[in-house]
Length: 555
Image (cartoon, rainbow, N blue to C red; front, top):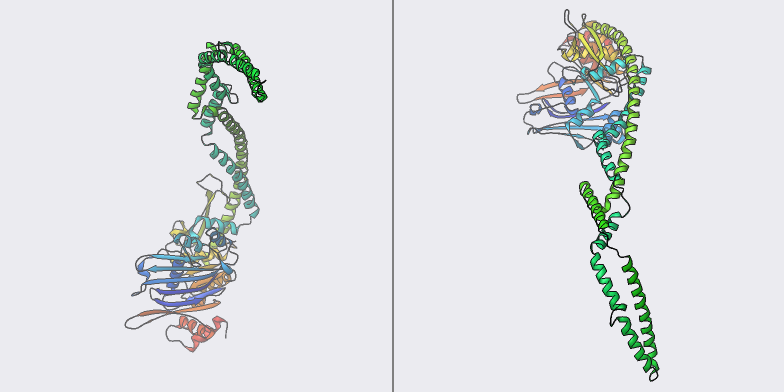
């Protein structure tokens, strides 16, 4: 609820501070005193658009702040939590500054915010009804909620909600799979072609490295043969071979050992060297015997390497990575096949969930249409009791233009009203008179137990064009509504003002240079004087005071 309002330099208001209570608060004062400016101020701090014309003459800026107790208002708390704005002690301070440079700044609990966020937050805190308000009642979503609040079909609403949740869960998973796959048909065809192409190669582990080594050997076969034979000749088979030389040196040193035994170690090394040379020669002979020129094999290797390099370039990978690339593509194809099967399964589930949802919404639509007739008749009677004898409300329930499921169903609900004889039924937003709209809003709100978290409602000009007994009915309705929510009502009628739980008087004073609006909360005696003024005009008689006390129930 609204706890406190502070206004500086707005129109004829210099400085005003007001505290508000629960129940019905009435705002009274002479015509032109500035009562509706208070409503305008609340509209501005809740996000209404404004220009520099609202700034008090001679001042640099207008500043308005409003303190709200949000209690368990989950909508506000969730919205601000998403914006990382804390709400200590469940209190919310909204602040708006409008400078004469045309700039507007907004704050929520000292955090600078956009006008859009301020407006969205305000929509969860206050409903303003009348020509100065945001006329939230004209919104179709609100009208649908009002109809559902009037009706007794929570079980059907729950069925629709559960059916929507089921459909939405399947739809989300299907959307995720479809989004991950992209153009799944084209991608899958391409992947299958690539996998089949690579699979047809019969790729083996480290095949490219092996082939490249074999290619080098085959292409250098002549050099290998020639060098190996020459080496064999030099080591063992040729004239003056290494083996012969070692044997000669060993014999010579063997003959010298009788003169110096220390040569024995050297001759032993030469004997080992001769053995190694012999073994190397044997290995070379075996190597040469197995070294066979094979032009056909060379051609095969060249072709295979060429094929692998061409495919690697096509797939933009290194030839050595072809096998791992193939395995990766195959995994993707397998996953896509699995996803395709899952998508087909989900598509069937989606169709079934959609059928269940539509069946539930059909039942809901039937209940809404039945409830709409009852509600329209009930509110029409209340409208006529509020000074519009030809007034009537009609509630249309039709299929919405959007076939996509919604949690609240697909019905489009619209309130139509006629207040004059022969006048066609028109949407609420097209009702010309602010007073008429306020009374229609009051008639609707007074007859509905809506689970709305908006705790504060403001009625401006609710008493326009009425008097006497109808005014008393309006006051009674407002007082009853004040037992459920905080109600602020701007009124000219004593029958309405006397029903208030608290009373604020707005006065305007002028001198030759300035005009100021002052605001005061009235005590019991001051209320008597104000009600008497409203009853009898400028000159207040004792009879008017007695009548005022009687209306207030204090005498």
